[in-house]
Image (cartoon, rainbow, N blue to C red):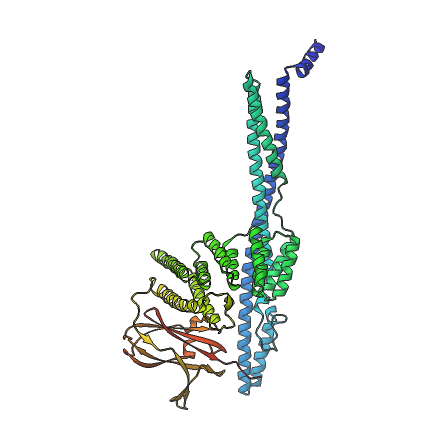
Length: 569
């Protein structure tokens, strides 16, 4: 009996219906494949979990390193301020012939310098005239380490996402293989041609799944080596210290280790931009986009760099892409308008500037409804838009400053028309910025007051403080601590609000901003003093100063003077 049963089993297994044997073989193969996929899915899920835990750990470590770094740097800077105060006290004691007190101050100063490395080389030379190198100390204290941890977090998070995607794909594969097994099993229960239909469909699904499994399995993962991350973090620290050549070399090493390191391309582009290597910066911005970092910052910087080279069509296209990525970014909208203006497309530029100003107005109105304030970046972008227009004007007039960023004059179409349009748009932007900042609304009725261009004078006083005279000039010697703005006016009204703004080397110093009520009548001549009473400075720092006058939040007039450099050895 047992032998007969054994023959019957062999007969069923090897001599049964050919179709059923074929289907059994397929089902067995698919079941084995499903088991393999299950193992792959389990492994991918485990790797995703480990990468996720690593990402959390790096994120916590990076945050902790930055927080402790900020505290350490704040303490060091406070120690430096106390150190300077003790030095001043020692000098004052010496002048009072109190050598003992001076010695005590200097001993305390020496003791203080031992409490932080910030007050010793390589960050600070106590015997030199220069202040401490804060950027160097920040880079060494926390920036390089925190950057490395942040990059490891990003790499682990990307790895987590990649392994999670693989795991999810394997789950889908298992679902489809289950469908195939169902079709194969169903084929054994029905007669005729339809069972072949089930088999063919099942085989087709299985074949597609096998190809998909192969692609998912061999697809490379976004892996950054430790050496690439360390080199990148070193580059960030060197760039922060303004060692730009060293930073480029560090980014080169990072990219040699990881040729698709998008962040390294982006930061190397920024550093090359700072080195005025605009062509190299453009190549790196584009490489960052290809490597996967196609965000608003990359497109924004790419468009601006094209603008500086006078490649206005490409500047417009790149900046448009940045607008598409972040429609609420006012700054990049102004860059689109500026590129149209430099290209000589005046009407289109005016339309773009109007659209950008409308967006800014809506943003201010939107946050005002909720009782909030606009982000500080909004005013930064609007001020930058004015500064960019003034830079273009200065470039085309042949009067560029050290801080001027503008395309070559020979790249600008119809310079005279562009300058005229830029002057008018600049006035509109200045008025809109002040009006939005102080009222939350665009400027009202145009102010009819007329003010002559500001002139500047240095007053001279006698020993009793009486004014002896005024020396009108456009430049004043180092050590000047009081300058008068002189102007004629007509059409003013008592009670109007007047705003004075002061810019030093192209950037406003908010410490000098002054709002007052007009009380000098309709017309006449006036002078406005600018001195220590309006700022915490001890004297005017050498450089260029621009004074702007606003009446009822609208730009009216401006003037420029210079403080000459100290010629003392």
